[in-house]
Image (cartoon, rainbow over all chains, first blue to last red; front, side, top):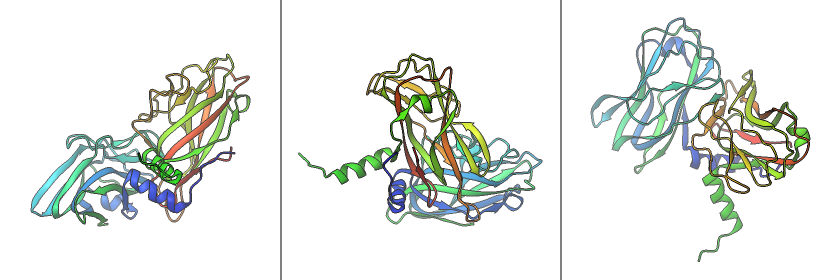
Amino acid sequence: MGFAYYDQDTIETVSEQIVGLRVDTGVLANLSYWHQDQWEIFSVYGVIKVLNLFAESTVIDGAPGATILQLNYTSATPAIVVQDLSAVSLTLATLVVGDRLRFQGTNITTAPVSTGTACITDGSCPLPMILGTEGGTATIGFVTTVADATAGSHQWSIFYVPMSDGASVTNVI
Amino acid sequence: MRDYQPSTRKRLGDLENGLRVSTGTLLNTVYMDNAQQEIFTVVGRVMVLQLYCEAITVFAAVATTLLFNATFSVPAVGVAPMTGASGVLTSLAQGNRVVYVGGGVGTATVITGGGGVSDVICANPQIIGSATIAGVMGAGTIGVLTAGGAQTSGTCQFTIHYASMEEGSYITTAL
């Protein structure tokens, strides 16, 4: 018989200190949100380090078209126009339930990747990014292009740690 | 010099390495039998920080290879590799470890260093499992597939270090 079990509170507390604080969006219909337009998904206050960020497919994406996605950042205070967080992904048309489109951090020209196998993401964000400004308010968003998704749903999750007093992330949608 | 309480050492270890779950000592004749064996149960979504098989007593002189994989019942996903196959485990000595290194799902497990010395560890953890959808948590198992010949003697132990990435997620083993 194996050993080293933990109560759930310990699991959550230890895990948050390893993978960061988690914020999820709701489950989003691809038809509405992967529609060749811009959406804001998370609000950012202050300065944060983004440890992981991904969209998980919760219902198979039946998109016949080749929807692609790019992550970005827009600051309201101070006023900074939309900035790239990543390059564009490859097509999202083949995502199945449990697939994740994963932000890789590293630099702003690094594309998010749909990786591995359903429920097995081959790697995590290797080089986190620092986002935000001291006391500033901003959003993390994405823009899809090329084609509209016509079916399926997904959910975004971000894992972060604050890097300035009071820094936090909340979901917009 | 600081004198640390056992609970402090344990918590710092958990924070550095992740939450640890180990099997008991397993017979190679049962768990390295040239077939699929399920080792850990995964509930929800976790990051697999470290995962390895350690030789507890010397392995048989059989050219067994080993890879880690995962299978999910929620959502339904058939067995899929987490790693590529290791080199042969012929006469693997006590204390040697066969280590998952994360990264791409085809990346081979590595027989590391020497007895008690692992000179390769996971540097790019995989994310395993799925989010809770409509109140239903993801569910699956992490298993091991051996090939190249069934082990005829020796014992081993599997250990995983993980972090939860979804409320209520955890890993257990019944072995």
